[in-house]
Length: 536
Image (tube, rainbow, N blue to C red):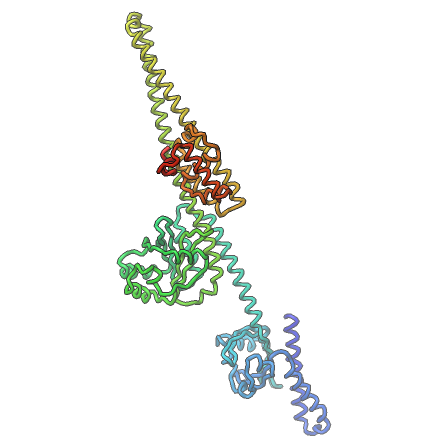
């Protein structure tokens, strides 16, 4: 028992003692005149103590009839009329009637109740939390006279505890999902996983998760969660499986999805699907799903859209988790960005591996031809050794064959040298400059660093091409800076993009481009510089 509970018990005991003493004084008819002063003082002290104590005090019968109450408790329940309050029954105070049953069971078992917490109703219709400590008052024969107790309002503490628990739960959820995203198996359905975690946050609401295609500017349905029991009915109404359906989005919708905020969609499914699905079908689906509102939030990072998640809401209870939902979607956006980058890297890695395998096969074929030539040469030499006459006759032919063989070997060696030079030239003139700029941009300007990543991916795709070697090998007299700008132009960057990446002015880039056109001989000609460079 803490000090606060002890103080309340002492207060209740003192009040009970004063009442008992008062009763004794009132019953003593023979000593009435002598005890009049003491009785009046006891009454005054009791009343002042009862009304002035800063906790709610009450007396009630086991049946719940109210016998007495102090002003503090009246103010606590927001009832200004003592008579009205005393007419009520204690059982009606509890939000959950089972709490009253638990309270009675405790006090009847041990004679006291300490620190019992319950949610109760006020007279203005609001609810609040109380902490109740009480005891049974009996007569000299042990019969129960009434319950006597003290109540305090702990609503503020309860709300604080709830907020702290919610905050801890939110942190635990985000910590768990962060680790799950880090350890998410490559190749698994990340959209289904995101939908399942969102379902944990939105309760009975329905969730579907979409991807966004940059090329087509379309949203595509990738996962449904919470609708498995209705899927056959949904397919029947739509006439197809909703997974895989795509909807084009406009600039306004795209801008709204890149805010990272959960927003309400007016107009129902018809507006959500950009009017691609007929109104009668949308109405039938809304009725089937029992929809009230639709909310949407985009997966976005640094202005890039990766998709969105849609919540088909049946009630609004989950909206108090709006901040948690937005934080989780932020986590998912990072995971989707990483997933997209990994897929791009795998695609380009596969392409490079195919190129290496092709070149390796060509070298193996050349080696086989060389081995065959060597074998034939050894055979010819053996034949020459066994027959001097035959050697004389075939000498001329063999010399010609040796010449041809040396040319083949020289040609093979030259091809190997060219392959090496092509790769080295491309890496030095194309890849290394981009990597150097990328290191600087990641530190100074993360926003434009992704343009270098795109440029790097483009030139990795073109790694096997002889562009870097041919550009420097041509007699164009290009400076290193002009060669770097040629690489960026060939990669599809505009003068404005190049100026931002190189940290120079737009006019400087345009000047370099004019010099390049003049040096490569296409100045004042209706020839596209990008097309010309890509044909080298």
